[in-house]
Length: 223
Image 1 (tube, one colour):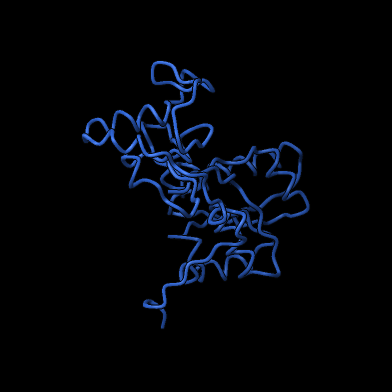
Image 2 (cartoon, rainbow, N blue to C red):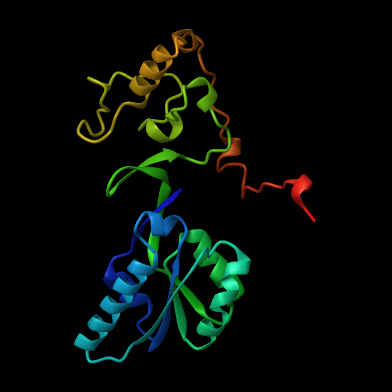
């Protein structure tokens, strides 16, 4: 899922400074699961914004509404009336949701309330790790299901490097596991260490960002 983190309050306050009535729009998708932009976080942010404005003796009215997903148009319809009644919108969704709202409601400023961080998953309560770089050329079939592009600090395709020690990465020996150590252990479990004997060629990054804006079209699903 997409992992996000709420922007600093002062940054959000700065963005909405000219406005007296804003819609704080949450999303029940990924950002709700990672506790960044769901209904609860919308309420907390709206309350903090009103309090901060009050301390400056400035008026701020907030409207709070959380929809199922901000990245799909059929759910965005529910925001039409609330948006029309507000001067600006703070989207608590990922960058996709922010852009979706900005595209739909062109006569309103839509500000991001969170920073979209990465594609990942929770590894324990309150801790999320990056697992996928959305690089467009998945190697998980030969690495035992562990992504070296996202989980190796150097995105090495042939590892480990000389910086690994006791299964930890030299970048942060406390928090970052060496992806290639994990790959070795996984392939060993599967009895497929022979895969490591095959030298991987330099990566084709054209599927990542160098190829321009990415798009997937499923002709079999189109109407």
